[in-house]
Length: 163
Image 1 (cartoon, rainbow, N blue to C red):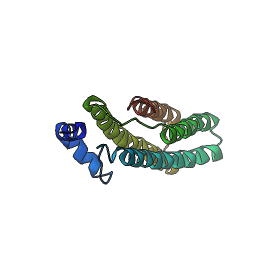
Image 2: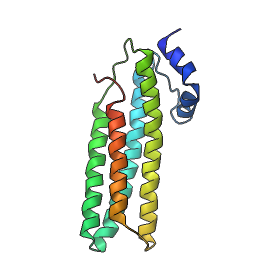
Image 3: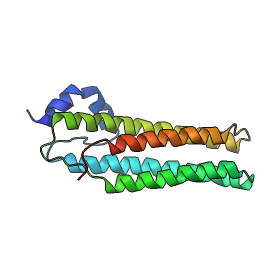
Image 4: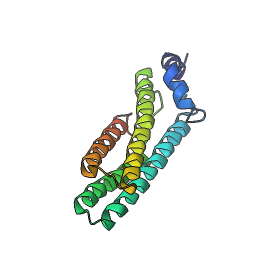
């Protein structure tokens, strides 16, 4: 039994959940590079959505001359740009990957996908509240969003061994 077969069996609920989002989710020797590219593409697309929503909120704050909010949102945009670059650059070595490494990758993939969904939902909610005239404390929300983004970047960074 290959390491991937063992991991797929051991983490079957997680693998099944990810496979609903990433077609042919498979870290076997033949498919690992393609699966990694699919995961990074999904995360990049979600990060771009987050950036787009952040820019919409920034535009509203700029029109209202809310410089503190604009600065907070600019930091999020910068962090998203860095994350997109990290997603583009980082590759994982799969040759002879241990089951321990593969388990770490699968767990990280699930955390990253769910985390990006949460991040985008937080941004959508903030945008909807802002556009409806009840923005609340956008600076506080921006700090929380930035913290979550930092956690996602950390998970991605620790996801596997760099090439």
